[in-house]
Length: 224
Image (cartoon, rainbow, N blue to C red; front, side, top):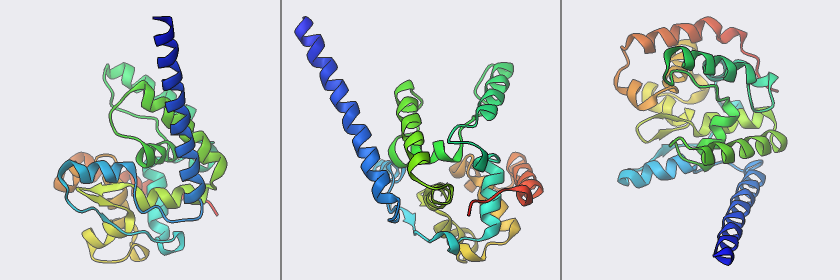
């Protein structure tokens, strides 16, 4: 029995090491190469084998307005933290305790990106632990500009729709470089629940979120 327990622990430890090595090597490669596929994209494709809409574009080929909008929508203190927004986490915990259900999250752009690249959407302590380690690695290995670039190119904007270039062409028939303020706010507002808001574009909550993004996006601090 003791030998079995030790063997099981060794297997689990080896598995964790392999996961960390996979994450580390992927981050090294993606530091200078486009991210053409993520774990979220793979799982989405495997759910029904429908093709993924995605096209990588460089940081300078993305509208300045969208960069401001996505930071205003997802992580206003993006340049001020090292992967974890402790004030945001504290606020989310207080709000969730008041409502006695999960209505707010404190995840940063870096944390969301780590989840999208390597993990899945189901909540678990194991996933959150691995996601935190991946976030720390990413913040140490990549610049803030690279994190934002990869995030904008890999985040979900609707059913089988990923990355701002594919989203701009899908919703507005134009390249990401040509997005104006209102279009940028629309796309950034989708991010909280893309598949739902893709079908419910007149929902009051979605319209309100766009207005809030438009209100604050000029205050967004950009890397570079």
